Image 1 (spheres, helix red, strand yellow):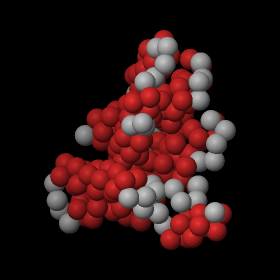
Image 2 (cartoon, helix red, strand yellow):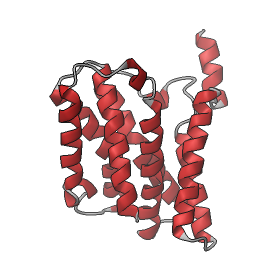
Image 3 (cartoon, helix red, strand yellow):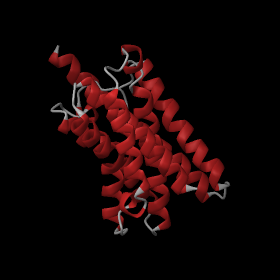
Image 4 (cartoon, helix red, strand yellow):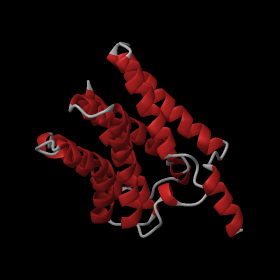
Length: 207
């Protein structure tokens, strides 16, 4: 089940990467590079921390092929409609949530504590976007003042999944619940501009 979730996470992450790269008017090499980084960087860090070898995208080489084809097809398009770009946050939120829960699941299966598993879930879910933003020469959205809750959504979803799993809830239900909490929390944070207090205070000072 985790492998299937991971596949959907790669698709969501790569889609976000493609749209982000096209927004910055990159060519095919740029589009593929950004999509590849966002789809695989967080999971790669997770695997390195857990000493899982080979890395998940090397073991399942079809993931890299999927990202390559997606980047190639979208690079042929003359432009991405602005209506599509406005929904950039959707694949971002889905990829973050999927990678977070599967990351926490792999971590707990490796024998980590629940807290460490939740942290590794956050790393898997958010750091692909962090590195992707850096490649696009912008401050990662995760670290920007007044950014709507992001890592907090990932962390919350991981804990819902881990706690339900610990109390004997069927794993599929625990996964769905964790994903749902993370995605809905992220959408709500964007809609109502929910931020951590320190970030909101800093943003007001900047003004």
